[in-house]
Image (cartoon, rainbow, N blue to C red; front, side, top):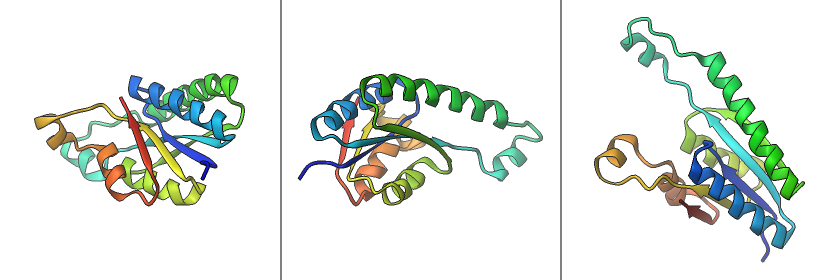
Length: 142
């Protein structure tokens, strides 16, 4: 069964670039739609309270994400026009799982940073959570 819609979560790091390349190659083979998804994570309110008035530059972060997504989307569309992109706020792994359903994707292609040991324990692994909880196949690359 061919893949009709590929969801590609991106954080604009090198693993995301590899995931986009892989997704576009698959999409060309199956004439699939591709959606690049960036989740704009904002710290919860209690982080700001603990930081004693330090403010996160939310507007700047959102604008930078838009610029980066538009650049990634333009490069992807040069190779494969049936590509779109969206930015959604939220907790990355939960938002990606929600996007699987809302987009009707039937394959997730995502990069992984390959963290191990202590850094993985503290930072968690978005890719691991998606692999464990996704109702559809997940293809990871680094």
